[in-house]
Image (cartoon, rainbow, N blue to C red; front, top):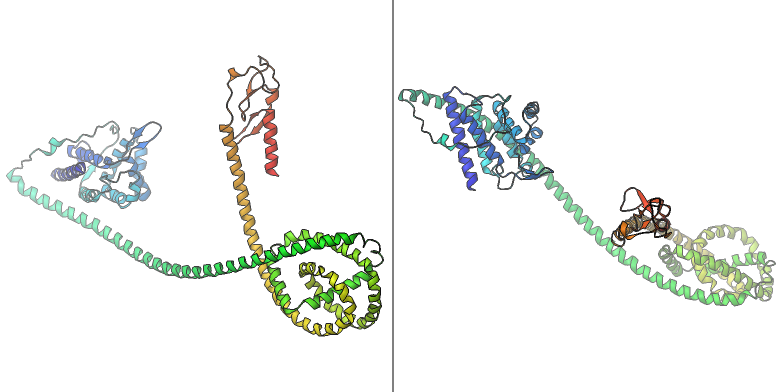
Length: 560
């Protein structure tokens, strides 16, 4: 803190002495003028105060020319100064370039303007100065105000031939302790000159202040506009937050409902699997009995199956079962892939059922006589029913999962075949109800399509997550291999091995030693002639035959 106050006081005294002495000489000074040299020396100390130490390959160094280079970026008008500095072959150091910049900016009477630009961008200066530096404090603004008075001085400085790199900046305090005695005759003339100089100084200050006021007003207008925009964006953001919270709550409720439905569907599927296992045991016993008359009765079985399917679909498709079936379909869409394999098994079971039908031919012979009579009655209705059956076939494909449970009731339906005459009258009444069920089915089908779209989107998201996980796993495996290579293997010294580790042949002048870059052991040229790229080496390197085979197997397993 004391150093800052001392430098500030010395700057004030040096500027005051320089202005007063220059006015006595007619406002023009040269490079050999002592007060001007002292001013440059004090200005250099002020710019060096609080500089951060920069490290490089050569060593640590401080240079006040670093922050001065920012002026070229912030003020393109100062590019002429930097071009002139580059054209000076005598200057080779950063200190010399900084001193030349001070000389040239004073000659242009823009030293205060350039430093004001730097102080206005303190965020950039903080990269070069410590927080307690003079240029980052209030003293920097005071120095810029004092430098405005130097614009009334005409500095005629010649930089060619001067050794600015090796000059030692020492402040001569004795120069400011001298008493200047003026003659009585010249006192009045000096007072008039001082008044004129003060007038010029005040005019220069007013000009500088008017520029700063205009800049501040423009900045205030910009800030007001930005504040208005920010308030509008805040209001819109709050509305978005409220809407997002409501959507989030709705999504949470929907997720809870989906979880409950999925749990119910899992329980139902477990029950169905138990029933299917019981059916399989019965089917295996019936396979041996149903192998004889398959080919003869295939045509009759196809007709009877269609009739039986119609009877089953009409009898069991009540309103409650349709609703339960559609909800089950929504839940079972996720498990369709796993159930496809079960469908293949059930197809084999249907073949067994067909074989079992052959044994029931004796019971059906009595039913066939009744069927012949019914065929005559159904021929008239066949055309109308075929159109309905085509529509029902599309529906039966979606209800294929339910048919598996219905096949379990096949044994009970054999006894019901004898009662088909009584069911014909009920079928006519149920056909009327079927039209209403069809409308309900169309509505449920549309809902099913919407749920399938949501499932597809979720599957795509899961696939993307799976790709990211697989990539991360591969990266982790590579890192583990590098760690194993670094920790697990030791580099065998040349003196420790007298023969090849693989072929056990001794080394000689013709049979030289070669290290495997993977395991670190020593081999001959024939046993280590392969090259592969390892995680720890960017280019292919020499590896032994054993490591070569292991790495190839590992790569093939990773690719598969």
